[in-house]
Figure 1 (cartoon, rainbow, N blue to C red):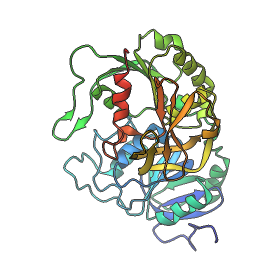
Figure 2 (figure 1 turned 30 degrees about the horizontal axis):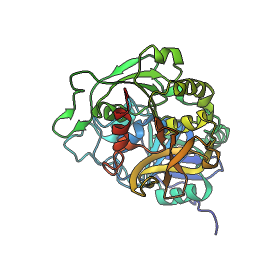
Figure 3 (figure 1 turned 45 degrees about the horizontal axis):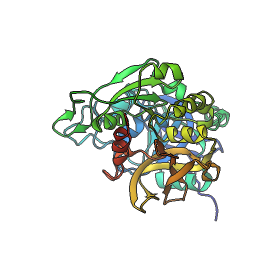
Amino acid sequence: MAEPTITPASKPEGATGVLVLANGEVAWGRGFGAEGEAVGEVCFHTAMTGYQEIMTDPSFAGQIITFTFPHIGNVGANADDVEADAPHALGMIVREDPTAPSNFRAMENLDGWMKRHARIGLAGIDTRALTRRIRAGGAPNGVVAHSPTGEFDLDVLLAMAKGWPGLEGMDLAKSVTRETHGSWEGGVWRLGFGYEAAGEGERPHVVAIDYGSKFNIFRNIVKAGAKVSVVPATATFDEIMALSPDGIFLSNGPGDPAATGEYAVPVIRQLLDTDKPLFGICLGHQLLALAVGARTTKMFQGHRGANHPVKRLSDGAVEITSMNHGFAVERESLPANARETHVSLFDGSNAGLELDGGRAFSVQYHPEASPGPQDSLYLFERFVGALGK
């Protein structure tokens, strides 16, 4: 069967946006948000809600997101539904033009939010065809561009797409991490109440290493009963231990784990020697695997969505999870002291591990995204429950 194509016969009238893939395929549409162009990896995301959280997830640095749900933007944007201070995804590709928001929490429309944060949107694309193209051929490099005049130099855009080196071998954690150590305050958000207070009294202390962390991870650690300090991705072992942690958290983040591991893995190995509880999510899971001698590999199309079934091997229970990763841990490379704990039921890939003794564990998915909605929150409770023991 021929590989799906997204290239139309000709440029349609009124086109103000374009997607150019590195193989020369072109898709015309209607631009919104910021003007200009952005080059990166083109992927797809299957979630039906949460586009603002997805766009602000630092794990999407270097990527252009194709949303398979057609009505993106219909609830507008607000100041609460974010996972970082600004979007990290380079742009979005959608089927329908974003409409005026229809939600009482909206503070602005999606177009204005994208403009304000210098992010490019492209509407009017056959996102089903593009998704099939990615599924069949893998996540390609591409350029998304927006010009109200509709004038584009396709040769220049194609050269940009071809010249982009791709995510493999790219360390992006340093580009999205915080620069200084800081404390995190506040728990999860509840309708009608806002963000919960951290609570009074003594709490065990978690030091979180920020490789590109999502805010809601810290909120759930606080909700589970701990206080959180956050340090940059490049923090040294001595800098971390100077904060007197009861436990260590390894955050999610973008890029190739092997590249980030050049400086992260030696620190994680030292932290493991302390025997303090350690918990990793997504990139943090991959870095923990690398620290014990396992390998990671670039996936063909990656996992990005809010409906990914994961089997927990201890009891056979299935968790509905949120995933966002383009690299995976090779289970065959796990050493004898690392036990696989979870597997993806979509493709059988590794989705969790635990070291002997159970004081260090990690998962490939995002329990803080709560697609289950509570299937995976036990992981935060398990981690915080082990602190100080």
